[in-house]
Image (cartoon, rainbow, N blue to C red; front, side, top):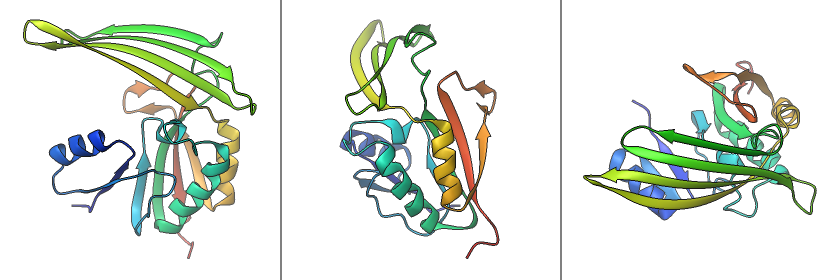
Length: 191
């Protein structure tokens, strides 16, 4: 029953989204400069604000994005998003993992470091085998993320006029170390 607007930097992801939700409106562009219409909710789930596919991703752009989201939300509106934080690469900065569901197998290697500007970053390499009949199709991906300090993000949200709640899980899926979900609500008395 809601009007939905989706924004993605990847044209291929926009096409997939249109196929799945034909009644929604999708814009090919960056979250960092997307026009946000008046809304009751904004979501950016899946470490959206961490991805460095757009070079503007990072702490300097996060406060202006939060202000734009705040300006679009009605009183009582919610900004639900998650962030990758230091520790996402594991206790020693390197994490590996493997999952096999019968329809796909996934191998992940993640490594944290600090870039030349002093920003914590994560490089995540993934190899995915997807079952297609009697064969598996292989795809390789490399993701580059900028990591955020949850206290700094909470301070930005507070400054923009949000009430902030950290969420430990999405339903029954508890978030691992280095991954924080945030529900930021516009004060109902806000103008």
